[in-house]
Length: 170
Image (cartoon, rainbow, N blue to C red; front, top):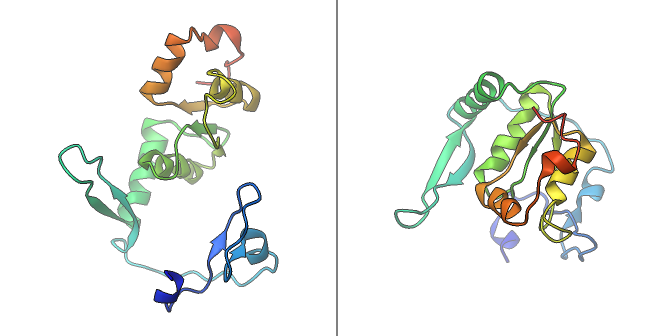
Protein backbone atom coordinates (compact mmCIF):
# COMPACT_ATOMS: atom_id res chain seq x y z
CA UNK A 1 0.00 0.00 0.00
CA UNK A 2 2.95 2.34 0.58
CA UNK A 3 4.27 1.69 -2.94
CA UNK A 4 0.83 2.48 -4.39
CA UNK A 5 0.97 5.89 -2.72
CA UNK A 6 4.32 6.75 -4.31
CA UNK A 7 3.65 7.28 -8.03
CA UNK A 8 7.25 8.35 -8.76
CA UNK A 9 8.72 5.16 -7.24
CA UNK A 10 10.58 3.19 -9.91
CA UNK A 11 11.69 0.11 -7.98
CA UNK A 12 11.38 -1.51 -4.59
CA UNK A 13 14.61 -3.38 -3.97
CA UNK A 14 14.95 -6.11 -1.37
CA UNK A 15 18.16 -7.59 -0.03
CA UNK A 16 16.87 -10.92 1.32
CA UNK A 17 18.14 -11.97 4.73
CA UNK A 18 19.17 -14.76 4.47
CA UNK A 19 16.42 -16.25 2.33
CA UNK A 20 13.39 -14.09 3.07
CA UNK A 21 10.65 -14.12 0.43
CA UNK A 22 10.53 -11.10 -1.86
CA UNK A 23 7.27 -9.13 -1.75
CA UNK A 24 5.13 -9.02 -4.89
CA UNK A 25 6.15 -6.07 -7.05
CA UNK A 26 9.65 -5.94 -5.57
CA UNK A 27 12.94 -7.21 -6.97
CA UNK A 28 16.12 -8.44 -5.40
CA UNK A 29 19.37 -6.49 -5.50
CA UNK A 30 20.79 -9.20 -7.79
CA UNK A 31 17.92 -8.72 -10.23
CA UNK A 32 18.32 -4.94 -10.23
CA UNK A 33 22.06 -5.08 -10.92
CA UNK A 34 22.02 -8.02 -13.39
CA UNK A 35 22.02 -5.74 -16.43
CA UNK A 36 24.36 -2.74 -16.37
CA UNK A 37 22.57 0.49 -17.05
CA UNK A 38 23.66 4.05 -17.75
CA UNK A 39 25.19 5.93 -14.86
CA UNK A 40 23.52 9.33 -14.70
CA UNK A 41 24.69 12.11 -12.41
CA UNK A 42 22.56 15.04 -11.38
CA UNK A 43 24.14 18.25 -10.13
CA UNK A 44 22.47 19.58 -7.00
CA UNK A 45 23.01 22.61 -4.80
CA UNK A 46 25.24 22.14 -1.73
CA UNK A 47 22.23 22.55 0.55
CA UNK A 48 20.15 19.96 -1.34
CA UNK A 49 19.00 17.34 1.23
CA UNK A 50 21.27 14.31 1.45
CA UNK A 51 19.81 12.51 4.46
CA UNK A 52 17.86 13.01 7.65
CA UNK A 53 19.29 12.07 11.05
CA UNK A 54 17.29 12.18 14.25
CA UNK A 55 18.35 13.60 17.59
CA UNK A 56 18.56 11.20 20.52
CA UNK A 57 15.30 12.32 22.06
CA UNK A 58 16.81 13.04 25.47
CA UNK A 59 14.75 16.24 25.83
CA UNK A 60 11.54 14.91 24.28
CA UNK A 61 10.68 13.24 21.02
CA UNK A 62 13.57 12.73 18.56
CA UNK A 63 13.81 15.64 16.14
CA UNK A 64 14.65 15.26 12.44
CA UNK A 65 17.75 17.11 11.26
CA UNK A 66 18.16 17.49 7.49
CA UNK A 67 21.76 17.44 6.27
CA UNK A 68 22.75 18.84 2.86
CA UNK A 69 25.27 17.41 0.40
CA UNK A 70 28.00 20.04 0.60
CA UNK A 71 28.27 20.57 4.31
CA UNK A 72 28.16 16.89 5.27
CA UNK A 73 30.60 15.69 2.64
CA UNK A 74 33.12 18.42 3.40
CA UNK A 75 32.76 17.95 7.16
CA UNK A 76 33.20 14.18 6.94
CA UNK A 77 36.16 14.55 4.58
CA UNK A 78 37.77 16.93 7.08
CA UNK A 79 36.95 14.89 10.18
CA UNK A 80 38.09 11.61 8.66
CA UNK A 81 41.30 13.07 7.26
CA UNK A 82 42.41 15.54 9.90
CA UNK A 83 40.90 14.19 13.12
CA UNK A 84 40.73 10.44 12.47
CA UNK A 85 43.78 10.24 10.17
CA UNK A 86 41.82 7.90 7.88
CA UNK A 87 43.97 6.53 5.06
CA UNK A 88 43.41 4.62 1.85
CA UNK A 89 45.05 1.52 3.33
CA UNK A 90 42.85 1.48 6.45
CA UNK A 91 40.34 -1.23 7.26
CA UNK A 92 37.68 0.71 9.13
CA UNK A 93 35.24 -0.98 11.50
CA UNK A 94 32.64 0.64 13.70
CA UNK A 95 30.05 -1.54 15.36
CA UNK A 96 26.81 0.19 14.42
CA UNK A 97 23.44 -0.27 12.80
CA UNK A 98 22.31 1.68 9.75
CA UNK A 99 19.87 3.55 11.99
CA UNK A 100 22.59 5.17 14.13
CA UNK A 101 24.51 8.23 12.97
CA UNK A 102 27.76 6.30 13.33
CA UNK A 103 26.76 4.39 10.19
CA UNK A 104 27.05 7.66 8.25
CA UNK A 105 30.42 8.26 9.91
CA UNK A 106 31.59 4.76 9.00
CA UNK A 107 30.53 5.08 5.37
CA UNK A 108 32.39 8.39 5.11
CA UNK A 109 35.62 6.41 5.48
CA UNK A 110 35.15 5.68 1.79
CA UNK A 111 35.92 9.35 1.07
CA UNK A 112 39.56 8.57 1.91
CA UNK A 113 39.57 5.19 0.17
CA UNK A 114 39.37 3.10 3.34
CA UNK A 115 37.88 -0.38 3.16
CA UNK A 116 34.91 -0.93 5.45
CA UNK A 117 34.54 -3.98 7.67
CA UNK A 118 30.90 -4.69 8.54
CA UNK A 119 29.27 -6.92 11.13
CA UNK A 120 25.63 -7.95 11.09
CA UNK A 121 23.91 -9.43 14.10
CA UNK A 122 24.31 -9.71 17.85
CA UNK A 123 27.99 -9.44 18.79
CA UNK A 124 27.41 -11.53 21.90
CA UNK A 125 25.65 -14.41 20.15
CA UNK A 126 28.86 -16.38 19.54
CA UNK A 127 30.55 -14.96 22.62
CA UNK A 128 31.65 -11.59 23.98
CA UNK A 129 34.95 -11.57 22.08
CA UNK A 130 33.33 -11.82 18.62
CA UNK A 131 34.06 -8.24 17.53
CA UNK A 132 37.64 -8.44 18.77
CA UNK A 133 38.11 -11.68 16.83
CA UNK A 134 36.67 -9.99 13.73
CA UNK A 135 39.17 -7.15 14.12
CA UNK A 136 42.07 -9.59 14.46
CA UNK A 137 40.93 -11.81 11.57
CA UNK A 138 40.29 -8.90 9.17
CA UNK A 139 43.34 -6.81 10.09
CA UNK A 140 41.19 -3.88 11.22
CA UNK A 141 43.29 -0.72 11.55
CA UNK A 142 40.63 1.70 12.83
CA UNK A 143 38.00 0.41 15.24
CA UNK A 144 35.04 2.03 16.97
CA UNK A 145 32.93 0.47 19.71
CA UNK A 146 30.28 1.83 22.05
CA UNK A 147 30.86 2.22 25.77
CA UNK A 148 28.24 -0.42 26.73
CA UNK A 149 30.10 -3.02 24.67
CA UNK A 150 33.44 -2.13 26.28
CA UNK A 151 31.82 -2.32 29.72
CA UNK A 152 30.34 -5.75 28.92
CA UNK A 153 33.77 -6.97 27.80
CA UNK A 154 35.37 -5.76 31.03
CA UNK A 155 32.70 -7.51 33.10
CA UNK A 156 33.25 -10.72 31.10
CA UNK A 157 36.99 -10.54 31.73
CA UNK A 158 37.85 -10.13 28.05
CA UNK A 159 41.45 -8.98 27.49
CA UNK A 160 41.53 -8.61 23.70
CA UNK A 161 45.06 -7.22 23.45
CA UNK A 162 46.45 -10.15 25.42
CA UNK A 163 44.39 -12.86 23.73
CA UNK A 164 44.38 -11.73 20.08
CA UNK A 165 46.72 -10.09 17.59
CA UNK A 166 45.32 -6.58 17.35
CA UNK A 167 48.62 -5.04 16.30
CA UNK A 168 47.05 -3.62 13.12
CA UNK A 169 44.68 -1.40 15.15
CA UNK A 170 46.22 2.04 15.49
